Image (cartoon, rainbow, N blue to C red; front, side):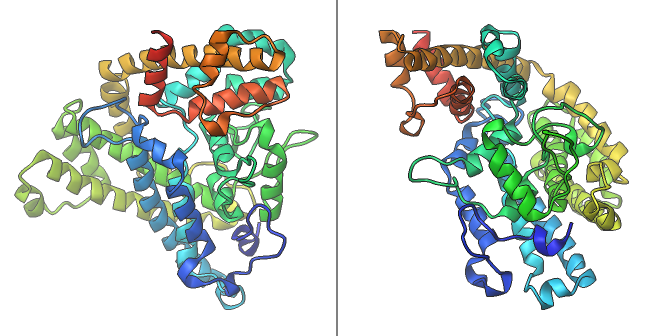
Length: 443
């Protein structure tokens, strides 16, 4: 892979080439990507979507929106630090093509901002609930009418693939979705493959999948334009990662490891003593005078969190630069933080979070509720939407479909497209809106 190709400013529908040296630096295309994402309704909806603690009423616990903003900030730092070194190593990128250090930061920041934009309500249990409705629930009846890859899209419903649809999906009058630059889409695509074959290798890029069958043609177009390396045979589509996708993933790994831990401490689910013990191992030398001067628990944890994130950013940059050539050759197959000198310490923190936060009664109870809500919505809306297509809709079906937002009032010809359409609608609901519709249905 080649950086000048990987940093493509092309957008869906372009008929002429966008050259970096001809860009207006006051309104750079990569920064426009960030703006379009942050002004989108899908991004706004993240303010009422679960990060760890579902539907928390406290004011300091992270939602998907605050988490995404923080991942974006960390991603921007990673991108700029890497970009500075890349331009030193390949001076033609700046001298001939006009790329700047901040371009790398802008691309990673925009992709990181959008990294959770396709996630359903109720956290990762929302993804599982959608998949299980089709795999073991009432939706199993649709299996015999679908192709294997279409069925796999449904039973392994994936927020990353749904996010690609959110960013790129067209509808009448809105061709190309948000029209994000191909470089940002490449950095967003952590798993550049389709749902089958499932986990064909131990390559981190094969861990999940990154696009639905509805988006296959455009996904391949983006990958080809960027010069990503194909790694699948026959009719299967898959590629090695865009190098900057490793930085987006690292930003997410850093934030959820440290900030979920911080949330747990602030909520009283994790003892504060663990903060100094475990975050201290990431920081190294702590200014004890500064630390002891902080009166509140929140300030003490915030201080340790900032130092820990700074250490992890520096180490992620080191791992990337040491393996940059292997990454460009498609021969680096691990997450950056899996190669970090702090991996053992991060694993220790994650283990405490799993025991004390992710498996807390509050989280488990809300996830159980989320399963019931999503299963009910899927069943009612899939049934009504298919009945309408087949001309057998009841009055109840017709009333139910009036709850669909205007942009979802459209006809889809194939069963797969109809099912995906309803899954997409439900995935875009906030936790609160999903619960509201559930309560309406249940009377």
